[in-house]
Amino acid sequence: MAKKLGKVSLLCDEELALILTKLLDPADRKSFSQVCKQWLRVEGLNRSSIRLLRPDFLRQALPRFPNIVTFETPNSISDTDLEFISQTCPKIEVLNLNLVTTSWDLGLKCLGLPALANGCPKLSKVILTGRSSITDQISVSLINLAKNLTYLDLGCCLEVSDKSLEAIGFCSSISYLSLEWCCQITDKGLGFLANGSCSKTLKTLILAWCEGITDVGVSHLQRMHCLEHLNLANCGRRITDTGGVAISAISTLKKLSLIALVKVSDRTIVALAENCLNLEVIDLSDCRLTGVGIRAFSSHKLLQSIVLRFCNVSGHNLEHLVRGCPSLKSVVLDSETLIQMKPQLGKRTSKVVTMY
Image (cartoon, rainbow, N blue to C red; front, side, top):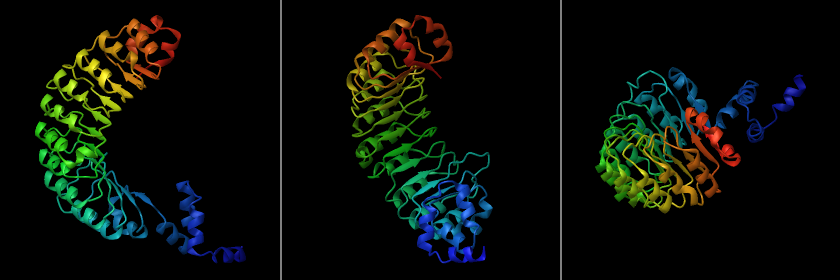
């Protein structure tokens, strides 16, 4: 056994690193790191990501992983912790601080994120969902310093307002932006996005539960040159057919959610079916559409999925839709509607219709 261990110890760091590339199971990598100090060091140098569940271990554990490109923690983290991360792991590209616990990020004020953005020049993806202490001051500093930012999730950052969107508007690299539950966002902020440099790069925009926006702001979005995914779910009663028809001018749209926009009617749905020829997925749950709106997509060439939960639908309209839209793979209904309608549906339609 001693002789075999001696031969293994002759492997250089590069050879050990090649072995590590074959170990995909985290448990196997852990076993690898426990063989000896050299293997422990090599495993740390070749780790690309880390998910820290105990922030109090941060300063003890992180120095072993200087080359990580992804850092994630679902718990509270302080400004000084983020500064330490930037100094220890300057190659970070993805920062996921999605707060999924009931703890508060009391230590996160204004210095940590800008310091990390400044110390990690390749930072491109930042997830800050649920971080209640994120303010416009923090987000604006982050956006100005993270020159390669392509993905930004500010969902449930309740202090974020139009000031942040003004800074985002100047960002010429961002392709994904989530502002879900950012209730201080208004039409003015959407104007900043639509008239800024980001209008030429933004592909996904999540505005669910942003009840401060109206038809005016939504109409701005038709100037987004490459928008593919737009989510306006539960944005309230101030979005009507005026805004809905304006959205239909976004010819690049592939995925659209209009959940619970009760002021949107068949007029919007018909305009979307006629003008958004690249649309693949649409969610119209809890919208006040009729058979006219449902049948409007019967001649669409690319639609793959339509969600009609809690909508007034009939078996006749579904049959018309499924027969006329060969690309359609799923029609999603609520369970009660599907149970009532199942006996009315033909063989092909029954295969397409599902419930959620």
